[in-house]
Figure 1 (cartoon, rainbow, N blue to C red):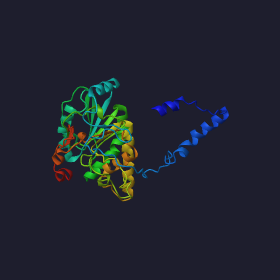
Figure 2 (figure 1 turned 60 degrees about the vertical axis):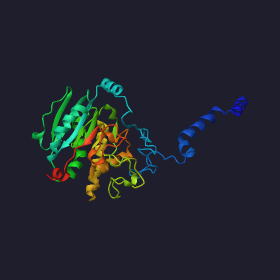
Figure 3 (figure 1 turned 30 degrees about the vertical axis):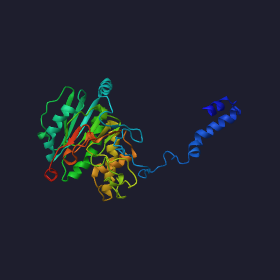
Figure 4 (figure 1 turned 90 degrees about the vertical axis):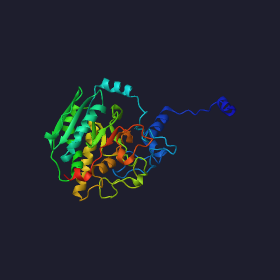
Length: 337
């Protein structure tokens, strides 16, 4: 403290600059300072897509078993206790938002639709306007489910496919196309979910952001080398083993309509390029989703509370709530009929 006081007490020394010299120095710093003063700083616009940055992996659980609530790029990670839903509900009501929920019920997957819609009516965006967009090849089998006021069920007929992988991958192209055709004019946000899920607890406006993604329940504690990214460099979904933030599940993502359109369009283009090169990513559209979200970071990340498989993973103490859960099923029976 004494040294600090002595330093302050000394008479400061000044050096005067002429106005022209001062102006030239400032211009030099503005235009060239970033590269000279910080040589490790990458120049904007020079990174080739897919090249990626190498940096330490963010850990969802700390050594003390606390959960991560903010990503290194300052996006919130949503867990129970990190938000006040009353404040958020009021903010979104003032904006008078409408949320779209897309779901694909193709072939025998239509059997999951009734439970999906009934539990969504109980827990999803309660108190807000919702459009359910059901894509199906069996419109006559779509169940009649009573809806709250301000909520609509819209059935959109699409063709089926011989392979379940094609159904999964076509989803990106279909959502992209319908964003341009109608979603941009009808809703403010889109939530894209798998049909073989059921809502079990509150899922509300706390998830909404420009671009959100959900931590995969099977990998939220894993090291990035264990992530099932596409590892073959020939694929547009390729992610090297020393890159990656989190592994995101393809069954629950979304954002503003414009951002979802950009995401799904990019994934569709990448899958089309892969097909032309005779390769299919290991986890299909989910692999391309993870590649896209590595290059275009989510503005909000949902914890595994928002998609969990209790049958496979139990209910660990770190999960205060299980908000959306997988419905048990026989994959071979459902996928191949």
